[in-house]
Image 1 (cartoon, rainbow, N blue to C red):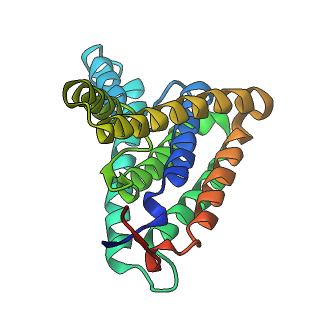
Image 2 (image 1 turned 30 degrees about the vertical axis):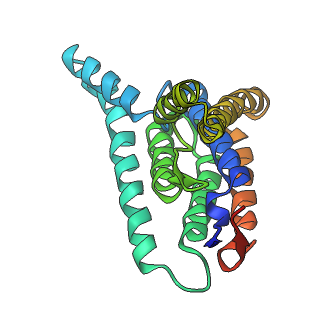
Length: 224
């Protein structure tokens, strides 16, 4: 049986993007005032809490990243529908992420709202552009869905003893581990380079962009 394999759904690209996802969350939280770049549930919670306490200025520190994340998702869909033929639409998405992250590195620390909104915008683009790995739904910018899927597949393996479930569980746990490593690496570089540490994340995204030139979409393989 012949199938088409996409580099955009490969394990190594997914792990690299998850590494960048963990890095961005660590950067925005540690270096940019305790706001989550990816975890919009946390931002929504903190927005609601601050609204209830009457801290409107603080509340909007969480509100605008949520809006930016949403706009990033919408832009990703727009790129998907309007992409030029010379580049894969996901490559265009990643390239936009690279340039935005480079810009964030030079935004002063007294403009954290702008920096966090831009990072969340990048995360919105990424979460919408890369939704599968080996044909399975996966997220590279957050962990809750991956944790659920990993646990479900592990439970199915113990129930049915089929190796495919164990393999699926390994994929999801690998992405979670990569996200954690990204946070660790992010914190390390933040201690070294402060606000400019995000340039390292931009470099990771640039590697992802270059990896996608490996045109596996036109290659075929036999299913064993």
